[in-house]
Image (cartoon, rainbow, N blue to C red; front, side, top):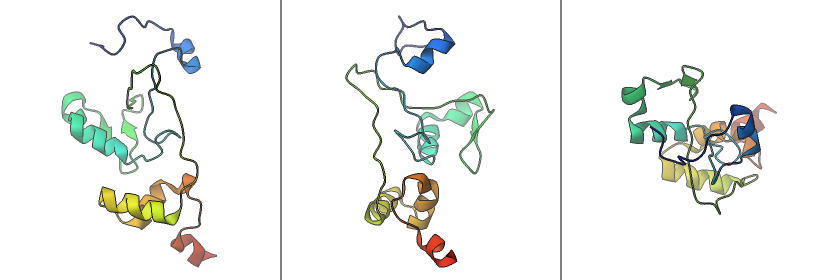
Length: 123
C-alpha cells in the first residue's frame, strides 16, 4: 500500500533527478543531519514491531537495504540545509532533546562551526 502519490511510477534511475512532488529528507543527510531522529521515527511508527527493521547503536538500519525518511508532499516544499551551527545552538538542541551537548556534538560533528571541547583538549 502506497498512498503518498499514487500516480507516480518512476523507474529507479529517474529518482535521482527528484521528479516527484514534495521532498523526502532522510535522517543523516544534509536536510536532516541528525541520525538520532531515526529513533524518533521508529518509536512513533513502531517500526521494529511492524516491520522487523532494527536500528544499530550507530543508528544504521538492519537489514542494510532498509530506508527511512520524512515524506512531505506539498509542491512548494524544498530542501535546505542549516549550514554550520554554533555551540549555543547545540546546547539548546541538546536541552530540547534531553541529551548531553557532547552527545549531540558527536552526531552533528559535520555541521559544527567550532571544535568541541574534547577535540580542543586533544590538540
